[in-house]
Image (tube, rainbow over all chains, first blue to last red; front, top):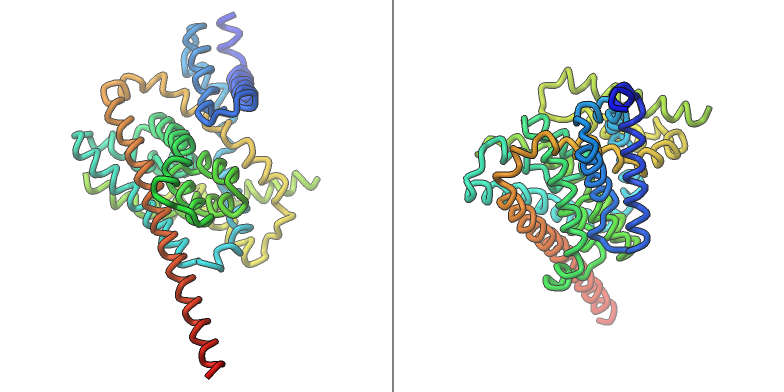
Length: 230
Length: 131
């Protein structure tokens, strides 16, 4: 049984997709934002590997074929961005200033808190790209020599926190303009936040998608500068 | 054949992104170069939307799956995460709430300022008509 799994080319992909499908099913049944399908899938796969005593390397040897498509998929983020460009025409200054402010604030707060908690440089750069979309954040963490697995987990949990707290934060801070709501969610909680933004409305969702890509690019440009500060 | 050609374009752009990444000395992932090439191609109509749309949408829909292997890698790095888990939890909570509030407020302030300015201009125009 063990050698069969070790030699299998499909074990990792099958277990990952199965876990994700279960996650989607649970989300559909309950409708709770905290039961994010991706989070459920990750917990299920980890639990399964621990339970059967399978090494991560064995799993990853056959699961890595899924990750192979990450770069092509990230390239395709240009498609929704291109579609929402027409929305930029109205209020483009406000939108760009808002997204830039969000990205800078994210890295600034992380710098400040990391300094306060006395985190090491490696720990700090691991967290630095945690508000941007996973594909970009992974790339940034890798370029800065962060711990990529922890970055990915931090990004996913950030998305879930953002989506769960969205209604509360938007109400407390009186953020009422649809475009501003979309940007708030997209800049702070990337794709998971944007999924929440689509629930609020079409314009919120489109602005969220725009914020994902633009904040990703701003983070790519300024992350190495921020990385030098701690 | 349609899907094959779409996949070919997307992989070709990914490959071009990798090439740029190896030539340019910037800390930018290959995927971001690829994203910019794709966006530029669409904006200049060198690539039309129907040449990439279906395959692109499919890849975007299944993208969350692609993060599972990396996140499961936490199994290996758990020992590095464990001693700072509370610090990380606080950083995540504080920064997410702050960024949401800040970017939302900034955007809203600028949108409303501009709307007010427009209203004022229109009012002035109307007054000029009446005089």
